[in-house]
Length: 76
Image 1: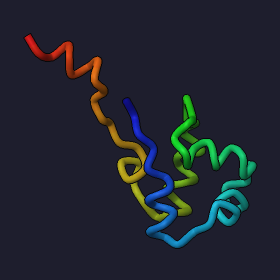
Image 2: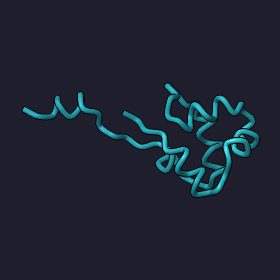
Image 3: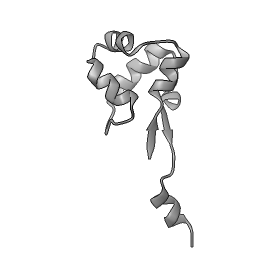
C-alpha cells in the first residue's frame, strides 16, 4: 500500500494545514484528507505543487509499504 507522509513533511517545514491549504489553493478539508492518509488518489498537479511548496521530492511524501496480503503471497 502507499502511505502518504504529508504530515511529516509539514511538521519538518513547520507549516500548518491552513497555510498549506492557502498555498495549494485547495480546501482545508481536502488537504486534511491527504494529510491523514485517507485519500484514494492524488493528482500529479497537486503532488507537484506540494513538492514545490514544501521543497521536497515525491518520495518524501509517498512511501510504498507492503501490506500483509502482499507479504503472504511472497511466502511459499
